Amino acid sequence: MLDRAARVQAGVILGLLAFVLLVLPSMLSSYWTDVMTSVVIYSIVALGLGMLMGRVGLVSLGQIAILAMGAWIAARLTYATSLPYPVVLLASGAMTAVLGTLVGLPALRLSGLFLALITLMLAGAITVVLTTTQFPNGGPGFLGHTDSSLGSNAVRRPAIASSDAAYFRYAVVVAVLMFGAVLLHLRSKAGRAWAAIRQSEASALAAGVDITRYKLWALGLASFISGIAGGILAGSVGKLYIVQFPISGNILLLAAVLMGGIYTLWGAVVAGILIKLLPALLDDWGLPPDLLTILFGVGILQVLITAPEGIAVQLPRDLGRLFGLLSKPFQQREAARKEAS
Amino acid sequence: MIEITDLTVRFGGVKPLDAMSVTFDAGTCGLIGPNGAGKTTFFNVMSGFVKPAAGRVQAFGDDLLRMPHFRRARWGLRRTFQTEQAIEELSVLDNVAMVWEHAKHDGRGKRADDVLDALAFVGLEAAPRDKVGTLDARERRLVEVARAVVGQPKVVLLDEPAAGLSDAETKHLAAVIRSIPEHTGALVILVDHDMTLVSACCENTAVLDFGKLIAAGPTAAILRDERVIKAYLGTEEVQ
Image 1 (cartoon, each protein chain N blue to C red):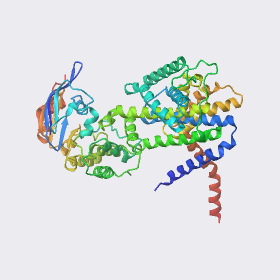
Image 2: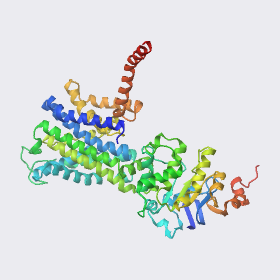
Image 3: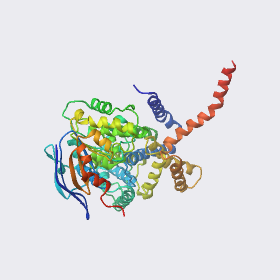
Image 4: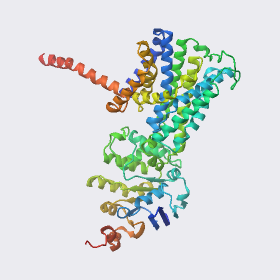
């Protein structure tokens, strides 16, 4: 039923997943496990932003703020209730979807630079609100507040994933579900309508696409998966601080998503690695973390010039070429040997 | 049948359409006129991209202008654009299926059948799974026409569908356009500058000049009409 390329891709995905779930956690220290968990979390956020930009044509500079909202909601839910963790995740996803869609409403009227600017301003506003309301503070109930100098309690984790390694696996499984959900959307009526909108709103309207509805749907889906990522983040770090969600993070995320590639879902994985693994590696090598901004600037240039489809497409293609070049002498020798015999 | 009554469009002081009244009966109807005559503006009014200052459009008993633009497609209005608008990143199949999904269906015919039927009707040889981005200009045009005829369209508006095609390709397209009414039951309005195409496809033709309807009737007679020739060639003497 599947053609060869699809079978190869399915094989690669299954192999990678098996490695990441079964082998990788046992190879990593607790620190690097935490780093890999945040790679997974930011891959989910990058997935949402990549979908908005690459498939619907909406630029958002507010996705980190939406992640913060999701984390906040999930943290409060764990303080206020004893709901099972998957329910906490779904609830924070659903609430973030509603709030994120409201934040994205300007997208119905604006596009391009203006939309980017407005979403960045809104991200700033969200950060201000979360700061002034003492994000997230550990008092009782959903909106509870405590003046205790100890501040927040740690966010609880799911019972089946209390260790760092188990929590990493949990995050990977959730990420796979989110990637699956987006993939299903792209292959359905919604994905086809988004492709029409991205190409030309006039022709999409002429084909009967209710543009408002499908844009809201895309914003809602991107916010939903960012909210779920926020829920995973809350359990991962235990305590949330506003400094984890700097406004500049929104811009870095956009840069990472562009470098990873917005036309393939693999791009989101690359973006997660760029935005979370790269700084940890720089730190490990004793290099200043600010170097990241410069590297991203250079990276964006190289992607724009040599591969607008992003690293996720460029890397396999160039590796394929390299392999072809390297194997050429061997093939020629083989051919010569056959000829001689 | 589409009855247009006193349709007027104003852009500031300019009137791209000025009290246009015409009836398109059935089959394939031509709409011609020099550049800037208001042909595409008329299509844009039909699609809902331009709001007219006055006038009515009664199509098969329904008041078209009262529907929101995306609902008109659901009702059965289809159109193609001067610059072809097939969706590059989707496959041929998905391009046509996408239009089907947003249209209304009376239950007969399944999506896959209707889509393949539309592709066979326009005579596209490209594999249905091919991405439209990989096709040439002629194939993209055919995909766009397939998008316009899939399912049960009521009105099909074609805006210069033969632009950029060779003579042989235009001939094939003319045969396809001519058989749309019989194949789908839709009324077709064809805008084009290629008079050979218009004569080959349309029994009746209406002529616009500076937003005003200057003639309407059987195509052969219209193309010999003195007012029409004047509109195309101009009347002022060369100094």
